[in-house]
Length: 111
Length: 115
Image 1: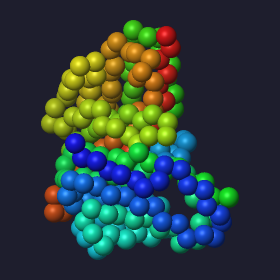
Image 2: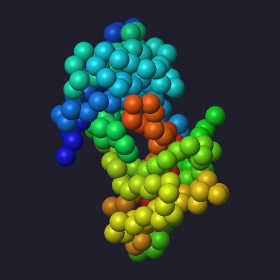
Image 3: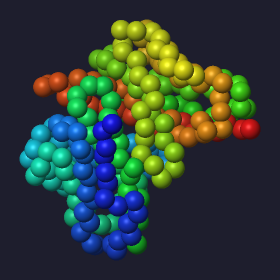
Image 4: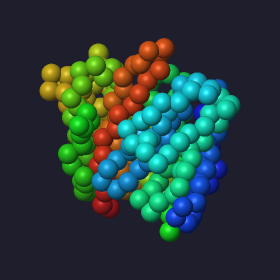
């Protein structure tokens, strides 16, 4: 089975900090995605990548950036964390079609 | 503009009865539909999918029905069990250039199965 690993389950950061969320997948998938999940808003796509060093904005990219230097690793960066970025962050990967495999999520709290 | 809608934020059923979760979509170009199940503090896990060329797919207690003319799909769980209590997300897939796909998710329906 594909495994998608997110480095932290829970994080607490201060407003203004630069935050790195790491995601690694072990099945040579081309496609990787970052979502955030908030109550009543479902899963919203932040950024995605279809290849190394390639990135595309999702629906809510403001305040975020990403890095994909290696195929297996896709990092989400909060340039200057704010309280409205408190959320559950979900990484996913995909070989093609259909469906994604998700990681366990990182619950980020910005105080 | 929401392309995938789950109009019921929550659903409560008795153990042993049928759970029916509904989903509507607007884009006729979606070629696959999927259901994911999510427990608190965990990532979503794939449950069942259906191609747009089919109208039914069954896997054990789970059946997904697709009505293309109505742009509507539903997930039936029979019989429902307390362990089915979770948030269920409907997702629609469209194929992009190069063979990649993009999933669009609904907002989720929280299912509670009471013993």
